[in-house]
Image (cartoon, helix red, strand yellow):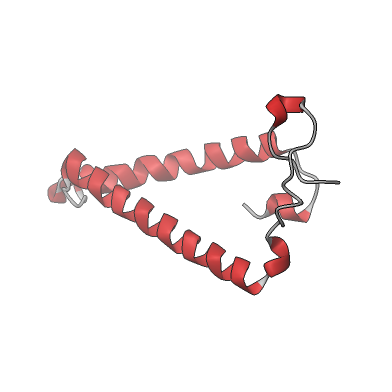
Length: 100
């Protein structure tokens, strides 16, 4: 996740490396949640495992949202001004682009 900050690595290559490395972890974690206790799992079943992962997802989103608010509060220069978000030209549907 931090590799793009430390060099000019291909974002596509980094995506595929992370994708390939995390798939076995996800499969193993899914097995841990759904296998019976006799098989060494937590026996949550598919619904329980989905609920568990959903709670983790919500907690991560809430934590990241709070962290982003703190960063924005601490670094007001990171927040673009309305003038920086002015519509420029008609390229790409005339969306919002920062001024250069």
